[in-house]
Image (cartoon, rainbow, N blue to C red; front, top):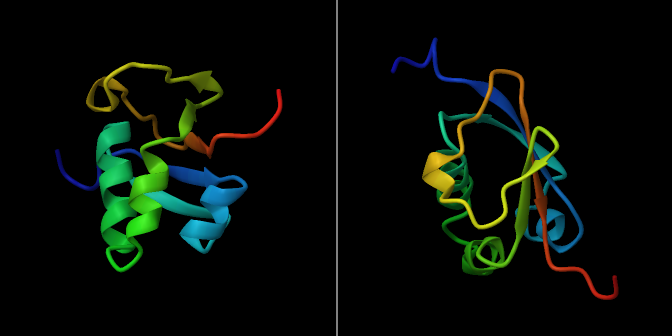
Length: 91
């Protein structure tokens, strides 16, 4: 798939994920959630806590919970949004 046909959208980070990412949001250009997260990790190779934190986060893709699905099976849409939600205290 060429970059012209690879979906582009936005990853939005919340709470501790935003602090570790160092930004509230950034663009993605990826076909799957796994690809988008791998790119985010690679951009922060010098921040190992960011990668560990992602392993504990919940994700919403265009408002829909990812849950336990394999991230490589979660397709991303053009203009879509990935929400990265770290564990929250309380309920």
